[in-house]
Length: 321
Length: 257
Image: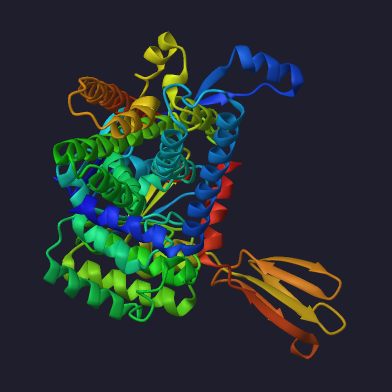
């Protein structure tokens, strides 16, 4: 039995279908029409203890609904979800002790009080022993270099500092499953790297299972071992992060050439070349392609290294079309 | 322990905004002064020394106490809950082992701690000749706060369905000012109307409490009826809020998460 089991889960929302115009508005007032909007359809996957999994999907794919189901905020209409053999339910405090969740842009820390006040409340909610709490908190605050801001009102802190404190707040009770929704939002590169080290360390030392939802491919690359892609209400990719990244990287990057007075190419085979004035664009080439340049005419050469994030979204776009 | 910490955080939350606290106290003082001036004019223009069973001094005492109570019975629980539902932050608390209702009550009590203590001191000082009665009044006050919170929490749960909660504020305020006996003592009303309205939760937590405190009469069975009525209301409100919360959470779309 896996640590997380999501079996044939489906979920629909009822959405009010508004008729357009003044007349439509009046008709809606007396006779509203609701339609079922399919959010998840027969979604199944399993996650083992200690895995680091990324959940990707375009806006509206159902990621948030899936997380709400996995945290027990809502119950599936079909299928079942189990975490450590427990049905996800917010009335089950044993289950709630098992999970820690960081929600992007949702403050769990009271903005008017210091982070320490909120941490103390969380300590009492989970009945964490004081010596364990002090030790854990000191470690996390030191790792994120937040000791000097822990006593300031949270609203006075930068977005990056707040996010890091939110992550600490979700780890105080030592959860076995950590769900992170857009954890690096508003963080600078240095803080992002510190976060990656931190999460990887938490995973290695405590065997905490990590599920991360992010649009930042850096997060996915630096944290996860496995990726789930949620598209059209279902899981369309479930595989190793390295496999997905290698596939994406296998596509040859587009080359842009500019000539001083004319196109700086003399010959080519096995590649798509388009020219305009003294510029040329080379794409769809392979290791067997031959492209001969006229160096004396060459003004500039750029290799378009499309980001992984862009490549993944190309997949999403193709799917939408 | 978690609810005590939550209450202390609610208390700190008030202290942090010193100016807000001062403005709140100042506005209540102005409100009381205006009521006193109005009733002073009514007494001066009337041929009667007693109006509705109240002498001028008794009326002033009533108005001061009513105003102090109105600082306790405010609408925060409605709007705090509504804000959490609208911006989705309620999710952060749903996934923690704490009752949303219990946390809201603890926060509310914490935010009113100063005024609760002032009321308790007032009840002890004015009840030195009858300590049992003073203790009874304190229990009534604390129970009234719990029932008031439950009523507002129930109204706050409507935010799962209503997009804007602020249009309800003037209605609630109107009910509270009238039925809570803040504008005038309810027993000035015709007897049949008084007998109906005094058993509404607004009256039980405020107007009836004031009557019990000011009449300071341990032999009066009315106060036991009031406490019993509060208990009935509490059960009705609690069961209703549990039912409405379950319905609401099914409808909750969580604003992203």
